[in-house]
Length: 278
Image (tube, helix red, strand yellow):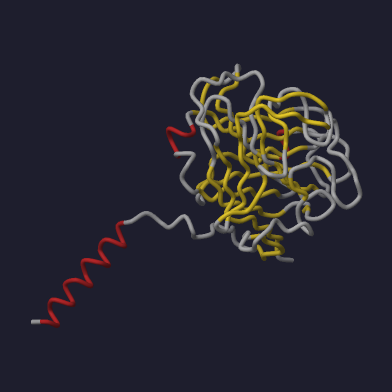
């Protein structure tokens, strides 16, 4: 009788597990790739050998992100001043925080109504084609503008891959949309939108965001499901160069601030880069 009871309990447990959706902790790496580099943020501080945190100026050679207005503001579309205190590790995750507060900045000088977090791997970690996987939780709200993206290592603006770029609001697409874009070296945008993203996917849930870049195409994935594809044959100036990572939260100057909770954060559990097997 006790054996039958234990067996019944085991069957019930297995039934419940089998009915659950696949764990978001499971990687979704396409076949034929080998891990080349990863950061799982399981240490006490951001690894400065891999990342420059809280600044748009490379900490090793002093290079500035092309087109930046200063060390802590990319351009006037961003409302927040980038700070090191908003770029930190907590409970095994990278936290890129947005705050609404009055802040006096020095580079560029000014008084800002927001601050935000930023890390980049310029001159430290980069790749040219392969598969990139990031486990992340995005913030929501009409003012927020968080993104996972790639910039060319040669310090010339373009190409740029916007792997996943969330707009709480943008005039041409409205509220709650995730953008996946290529800005080519020929100054052409190739844009697509995952509409009503938070409503569909829940921004504040952990998801695995994947991006595969080959000679022929680029493919975007969420939890292993393809959500967009761009063919090289559809574009001019297909990227073929080393590119570094940018992970940042932000606030868009042109967007309203009527439905955003402060502070908020973009959380990154891990970043992994894979290369195709030869």
